[in-house]
Amino acid sequence: MGRIQTASVIPGFRHASLSVLALTLTFLGCQTEAERSGSVVRDSAGVEIVENSDFAWPDGQGWRLASQPVLDIGAIDTDPNQQLFQVVGALRLSDDRIVIANSGTGELRFYDISGRFISKSGRKGGGPGEFQGLRWLGRTGADSLLAFDWRTRRLSIFDPAGNFVRSVTLDALAPAPPSHIYVGLFGDGSLMIGAQRLFAAGTIQSGVHSDTIFHLRFDSRGLTHDTIGRHPGAESYILVHDGGLELVPLPFGRTPRTAVYQSAYYFGRGDSYAIDLYSAAGKLTRSIRNRKPNERVTVDDRRRYIERSLEGIDDDDERRVIESLISDIPFPATMPVYAELRLDSEGYLWVEDYRKAGDERPRWTVFDPSGRMLGMVEMPDRFTIHQIGPDFVLGSGKDEMDIEHVRLYELIKPR
Image (tube, rainbow, N blue to C red; front, side):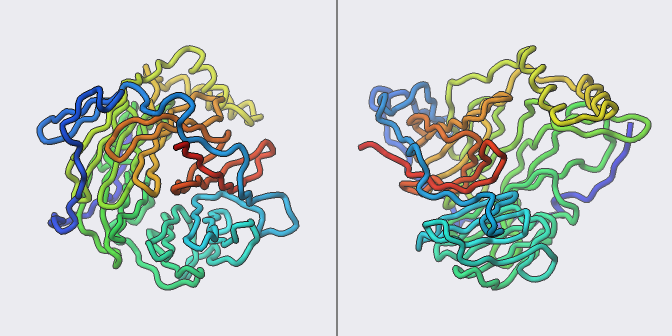
């Protein structure tokens, strides 16, 4: 048994009224199940429940990505500006330029729509406009860019040309980096950060551990409006022994997922296929459900997980230590039912299916702004979405040679 004391993520926020920023939602009228094929809407103590059982898109008439990208940045090239390393974000600006948050070099890189390098901002370091742990890239409606450094708790603002404007330090976050973090931008320019501290103060025992994730809202000066959400955090497994403790992610563990749009945010963990919608003040207004069940963890799933955990480890002693550690971990009975949430520019919610080890093909289920389940869109193998526009999807991933790329695909929407 060990005892660890850490600073709290929340040093004592005041409760502030956010009524001026209250969520405005268009609720569905009294529709029958036949009028909304595959979905039923009901009320539960003032919360709208949307139950989905089938896709609304007819076969062959759903959205899909074009087979080839219209833009591909990233290669083994003599030009280092075409070499990408640890991409954590990418955006298409209103003038069609592409900006990439290249965390490996601490840079924001700008390219034209043909993929030609234009300029870059930032670098590794602790000075103004520099980054030690570039984690997130966002923008306001006027193409001002926001970049968050999770190590320094600092938000840097750049103009559309990439010139550094100013930075603010989010002092409300504890000095030590959190174990899990989410960053999102509301429509009014205020910032949401979901932060989970690894341990709360107290006695730590061996077993499955999950602290609370706090959703905090900051204004443009870096001051907190309020703590607008408290939810179950990511699951880890802790093994306490005489020499200290070991901490590893729980195999198939639940991880909090958040997505912000305008004056609301979605949250879920994949415990079941339920995704809740909250106002910017933290009030639950809607819960989107899908009858898809969580898959059971089989003996083969456990075996594949262990094999992947040992991939690339040649040292026999290290392999034995990891095998011994994994043997102590209690595998959950089921997997999470979904892996990630995204929102497109028109307010449609995209939910990525949870994938087993070895499955490299992302599959995203699309829900319209009312919560109705429309259908599924497949992405290229090993592709991470960064932005979904009205007619494009921008993301990053590695090719067969493990070279990083940022690619832009046309999003085809049959009428």
